[in-house]
Image (cartoon, rainbow over all chains, first blue to last red; front, side, top):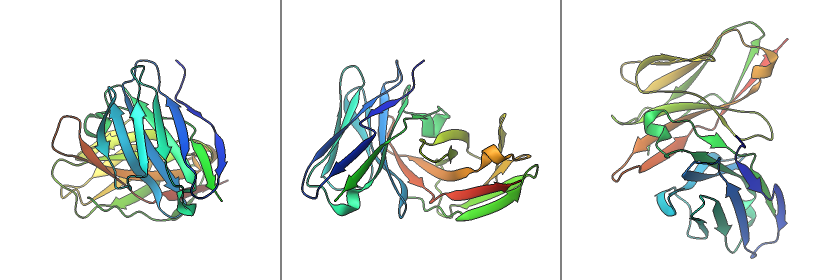
Amino acid sequence: KAGVTQTPRYLIKTRGQQVTLSCSPISGHRSVSWYQQTPGQGLQFLFEYFSETQRNKGNFPGRFSGRQFSNSRSEMNVSTLELGDSALYLCASSSTGAGFMFGETQYFGPGTRLLVL
Amino acid sequence: LAKTTQPISMDSYEGQEVNITCSHNNIATNDYITWYQQFPSQGPRFIIQGYKTKVTNEVASLFIPADRKSSTLSLPRVSLSDTAVYYCLVGRPTSGAGSYQLTFGKGTKLSVIP
């Protein structure tokens, strides 16, 4: 089975621009979650999509948004980029998204490294 | 949200057992505890998950005391390939099917020395 793929792997943007990141989950997985990882804050949960609906959301401003398509592929968008948005953005997929309560494993992609100048 | 605290770094020699403890003092009744391993330039990898007492799988054990205010990840006989960052995560179910809040620890960098 192919793993979780994320594109692009690296991205450089300037302040004020917007960016869209893409995530393709493992075939058959319906839940896709997004995370931001920085040296200062560590791993932080952004949001989770299940069957094209945002089901869970972390504590991030509205500049961070996402969507999920009918084939479970997901995109994350960040508008009006700030220097502090420089980070590794990780995507994870699981079958039902219930992993944190019922032991279902989440599979992470390699991430997209975003640098904002 | 649950707050998690774990040591920033630990060193261990090959072949030793390593115990990494995560503190989560305000854990709630329905919260679950999960540990992940992350190598440089890779996404986190699930290691183990538990609710209470002890859970063991082929790579690690997770000890959770009765008050559940902490959890300890135990790695038996570590090797150089276990050098990685280990994250503690508390997941809290909220209202609505499949809804939850997640709190990650800042991670513990484990260095295994030959």
